[in-house]
Image 1 (cartoon, rainbow, N blue to C red):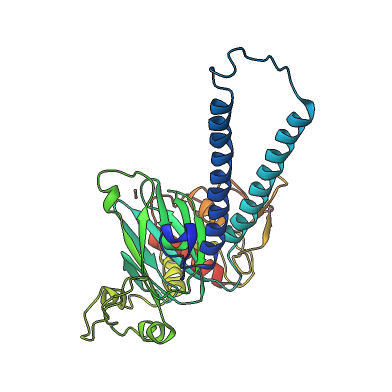
Image 2 (cartoon, helix red, strand yellow):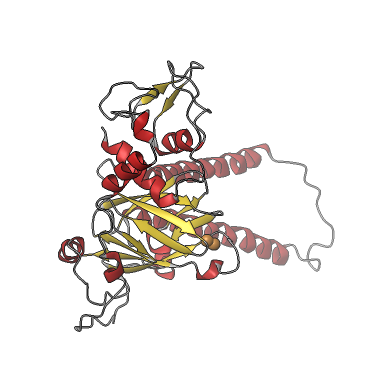
Length: 339
Ligand code: CUA
């Protein structure tokens, strides 16, 4: 959290990837400063050195091959360094570690809703433990939004009809501001949320549904830690509605009749079994192979005839519009659990 130089002009760096981005950003700024001084300094030098009083007549110069090679090669190398550096950090930002805790995020005009594996939900506040990789699996109920956490230096579009994801690991307990970074209508600027990074004691208390005291904004030097147990919206998140996310998904799976055609034990019915499906490759009737990730499952539920599994026929009706985003997340969590 101790930031010096260029980084001190930025919001606090509260995730591992934030420090990597700040280093690249600092490099770009100082590189720009260097060339600014070189170019503007050279301009001023030549303006003074060859002013009209001492050099009334200009000398014609028609090219200098060594000079042109140098000023082509140096910028090319610098651009390649910037590209490679950016690529390495981008990969780090995009690829969540395998042990990441998953949270579902739903964007809707104009709030952020969160669904946890234990079945709880919260709106406007996302609770996560400190030093733990957290993967957000995000979708939108209406229009394009963008989930932006400046302190973590991560931002990702949230798109209706598909899943996108982003991950972070924060080492700074406290509240971190979230913005919607894609214009999404009248109250776009009010589409805010906070990520509440909890210490391990707070996290275990929260897991058990306990109320948390007031949690200070991360990075504020004189954040008041109040002793009275203020009722935060942790209380609303402490409702345990209908069992875990997987249990909710199993219920929808039965109520919606999915169970009639899809077994959970590996036996084929009218449709393929869902056991061990998630994360593997699926052979399609048109010869292609697709990875069974969240987006594949979603597409198969909303538009089942787009990709027919080899050996089965196109008989499944669409469930588009019949499941809410929350229910969709739960059903997919249930399918994931069948591995
Ligand atoms: Cu949601 Cu802007």
